[in-house]
Image 1 (cartoon, helix red, strand yellow):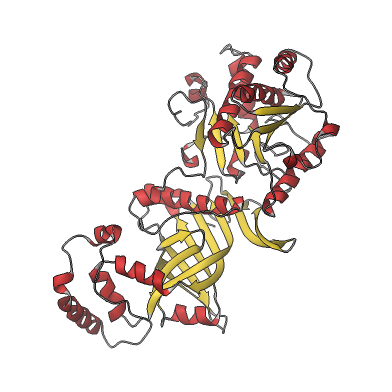
Image 2 (cartoon, helix red, strand yellow):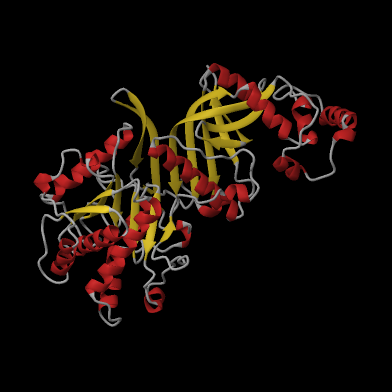
Length: 491
């Protein structure tokens, strides 16, 4: 998987010029490019969605080249063991489209008129391929494609209410999106997978789904040089490469950051997966970029007087249940949490121009969980919460030093002579009892905001929040109007 920070995104004009070069001086034909694109889409689907579980596929094809890519993908999916059906309302009868239709008919792949599609597409299909419009499309979709796009949007509403729903795969760009600005109206398709072709288009930066693949292994070096493209290497003989925000490994754990604690489990709601994986991805990127202690965060609380206070704390773990840190239960933040159990977290990683805000309800973790964490700490760190009476008055630092020295001497024979970080990772057990006034808190998220800085100062911002829909609390995604920075450092 390649970080999106290391990949070029192209605008509409650049995408057009690249196609012109490919089909001009470089000698590619339209049908060759469609074949490469369709094979890439089918390969990406095969990497994520097994044909044994996601057998029935509906490929919705538009009248242009994007529709041709969908026809080729359907043929390859058939050979890969899937059962594709095709909806091709505005057939292009010119070559190579007519030949692609003939090939599919010879394989007995069914073509379904729009009026014969089921009311609920998810009842008959596990996968829907959106091959309606490509990067050259502009304006508003016309019938019957406008209604087809609305039906794809309705599938997303099924996902949000935990109903059985098909997954949506978009070819190159989600149909109806602006090639640069994305889903301008905020009511368009939000696919589960995006397969970018040749090079990702700028709108792909707004993609919030789990699976983003790129297919462009054929791109000649002359085009890479001319457009100064940064494209990822392709693994083995694969036609596609995963990019974006679905981590294959826990890169933060590889760097030694709270390795024993991070276990990003996910719940059934797919948007839960998106936000947690996106957070993990950015945390790992920050670590790889050399950000010092990227797991430190600003914790903001307010008591019954509604006066906010903020401080830096260490994130000790994150999973499907929330974000965990440990502290003194007699501190100001603990008192404010007891009076008002809501808080916010802020992570800012300057070198990668990323910021994450999290808001939610705060609860104490169980005594058992606090005990497990405390016992995993090295003895010299276990002593600190015993000595420190956080947020109380003290007449001099020498008092703390003296008390710490006393405890250190008391347990001197038990303290191993290895680095603290090493002890933390292997989870050495110790004999000091956890003080009852010290333990963990967990923030259960109800709101995420991901901010991505851009050199143009037109920043990207996505908001995930819990909303009540039909009596259920579900996660929804909101794309916010891109923020035009008021200064070079504006967030």
